[in-house]
Image (cartoon, rainbow, N blue to C red):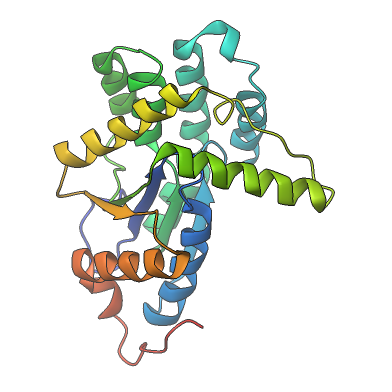
Length: 239
């Protein structure tokens, strides 16, 4: 069963996209709490690359920059390998069980990072996506948009906080790219949203976390109203 399959109990697949420091992880946590209180369905939160043990191992190699010397095509293949395992191990089983899946990045990030910013042929990436993703496409993609300079400043602040807490920090393979790279990423995500307005919604991520959360709740309620109407009495709100 896929995210597009029929049936009253089918799952819903929502992805979060955007540049570095856009606040995707924070907003996924907040939306998950809201949906758990309001939908009456189990909610799974996950991320890419990662989301399954094998995919997490690939994530470590990618973010450490081990594939960078081999070029964007090699990186794209590794992202696809991680995505195959992630889909088979976590996403598709959760959707088949009627659960809501919230994913921090998905195939649009490959289009943006390795395609628009990395220079890979879009037709090549489309072919890879058709093979890897198939019909398991998001019901809704929230693109958190902000100026790359703001996003990178937030990423640096997060790294500083991690270092203060004693965690390993420092920019990863993509955060360390030049500002021009991140500007191309932003343009790529906005182009994806413009090309697929039925699936994608752009949210102003330059606002406060509370304002972004409110905007996301509005979009989800408008685009996927069934999430809040399928379980009578499930009207309690998240704290």
